Image (cartoon, rainbow, N blue to C red):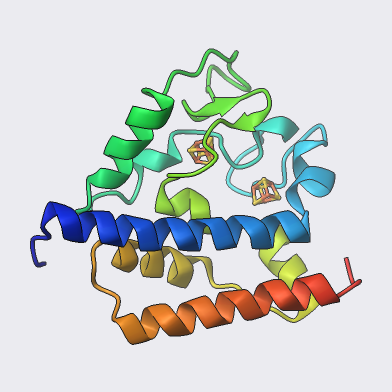
Length: 179
Ligand code: SF4
Ligand code: SF4
């Protein structure tokens, strides 16, 4: 793993945030979570029984899978902008509290989200993307790609191709009336 200069880390973070904004646009256009999960009594999250509004933010997922992220600017900038995680919500089940960035209105982070959160779709969401738009969405691949972008390990060519693929997905969703 090569050590990045602060300037290089900043460039990687900018690229990461461009991808983050595009995934967020894609997910907003698909609009799956609200109507199918977070507005319901129980969430579609498959790992455990979770109150609907908590969705899949049932624990501090931003602390998982960070062992391979060497670009500390992501968390530094997040804390600078949003402060330290500080969830004041009641436990949702069996003394378990939602993620420390969660609020009754959902995730407090509008950007600078951890890569696991930017990429994550549950099985129902992924299946919906495939069924509704014929889009194959591989959560682990996307998460690993975002990790590589942050670490400066994804080549310019792969970044270009990933961006094209993502823009194409957004266009497909925009043009579709399937959902
Ligand atoms: S990804 Fe799945 S579990 Fe998470 S909020 Fe959306 S529908 Fe719910
Ligand atoms: S950081 Fe935001 S999206 Fe990620 S688990 Fe926490 S509340 Fe959910």
